[in-house]
Length: 216
Image (cartoon, rainbow, N blue to C red; front, side, top):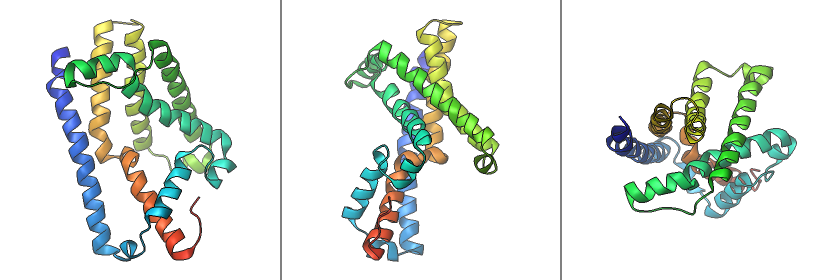
């Protein structure tokens, strides 16, 4: 089973992720050209870049400054979600063995802390959806499922790295859940990891180029 999830299934998961995201981006651009051509008439790289940078910096937008606690939790969640699996030392060893390349590596201790920070932030996000009426009313089982999909690889990875429960089972589940997340990204709200940039470009061009107003 280990050989399957680290071999053929890993190739399948990465292929679905990359092909799926490329397809989503091409489809959305074509749809915009068909139904909202005016978007491209006033598109601005300058406004798009300014808006994107503002939204990528903590407290860079007005809405972030108005909700500092949520902003902090959100940035911790996303930074740990992206950085931990890419830069973790054990993952880089696998990248080198399987794919022939590696990145700068985080130590195992740093990876542990980032995993715990991520799990804490994810827990607070779940509690927010339960406790706040304005968030709860727009939350469905689908949202909880997506949170479970992103939490599962971190939880099982932490269990495996500390040899909690049955090590090999936790390791296989960790890899499997990670691949499920990759496969799910192009088909769910998680696709915003790349579509975010298209959204910001559109809103910034609309607000800035046409109306002379900032979108942050």
